[in-house]
Length: 232
Image (cartoon, rainbow, N blue to C red; front, side, top):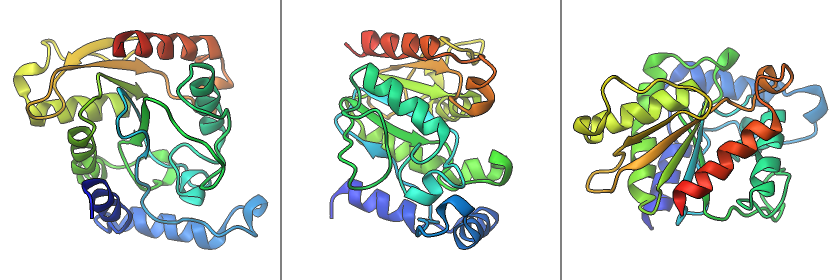
């Protein structure tokens, strides 16, 4: 068994957070009416994409009826539709839609993960739950040894990446601590012995942001263009 298979197996079988596990299993049992004929994944969700990627996208957590249903990060909900459409426009994805395993989608030079691996009630994992998931992100970043850019989709992902840098190399954190913002940048070290990477901020492609115009397609395209530029 290789390191990725071992890590993903540990993620999928994780039971560190009883509240999150109970919520995911309940959602998978009750289901949303539109998906009542589908079998929900209902387990922690591993990362997805190109393990030789230079760009890592980090979100908040699986959506209850998105990745918690499909088993793939940012798949099966409106946020994922926005993200994959943008990734396709930028050349990071072979398709503009992600529906689940077997859909033919592949990521190119990109890997997608999240700060939390279980769908939290009200999309709000507790600090303790985020801390319990943190070692998984650390290990992904250690394995993704070609990553040069981490795109944090939202403030929680931004903070999770900074916490990773704090654990790996506290001296690499700029002072004052970098603040999240759309288009914000910071240089940090996220893997022991690895080169510093650029942490790049983006508003999360949630309906709360996209429906209100806080995040537009152009704004997300600009971040992806910058990520490509930094990676190259």
